[in-house]
Amino acid sequence: AQSVSQHNHHVILSEAASLELGCNYSYGGTVNLFWYVQYPGQHLQLLLKYFSGDPLVKGIKGFEAEFIKSKFSFNLRKPSVQWSDTAEYFCAVANSGGYNKLIFGAGTRLAVHP
Amino acid sequence: DADVTQTPRNRITKTGKRIMLECSQTKGHDRMYWYRQDPGLGLRLIYYSFDVKDINKGEISDGYSVSRQAQAKFSLSLESAIPNQTALYFCATSDPGNEQFFGPGTRLTVL
Image (cartoon, rainbow over all chains, first blue to last red; front, side, top):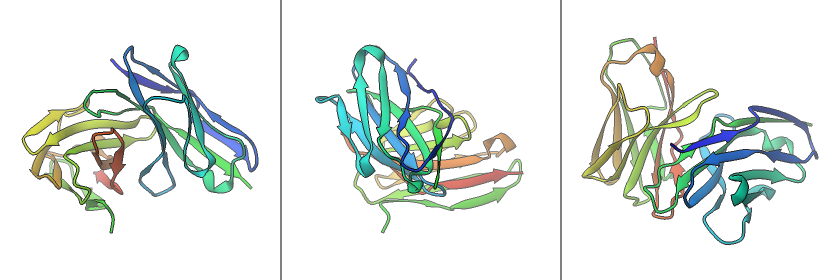
């Protein structure tokens, strides 16, 4: 069965620090990959997605992620975080050509201190 | 106006009561989903529907049922609520390109 693993459950950073959140998935076929963000008290919003092509994808708010097929990974990065990036981040995977069923990771709660 | 709406936004109920959570969308998508979110577990799929006549169980469907009344409406029911169904429930829709759009969530507490 497909699964998604996010390595860090809680991350605390100071403003301007660099961010990398790990995501690994288990599925042998072609996948579509997503990062969603949930700001406090809000619903999930799409940060970025990868379907095919350039494995380095850029999303909103300065976020990017790199798909490394050999490592089954899709890590999220941001060179310099801001206080407003405080949120919970979810990695999700869907098997390409399937039925849009997303499998979510457990989430990483990021707190950015001024 | 929001593309995906959920009612109610908050609900407190007692064990054994029947509860219905409603979801409406104006995106024109055929595919709709119900998830529950629990701390440390992420989102887990309860049910999904690819059109009005197609409804499928997700990974945690026990204790839940759904109804797809129209393309725009997808309701989730708890026939007899129990405390471990206390959670945040999200409805979502998707386009054929796999991106899912989420509603604002319903916070359900079962006492």
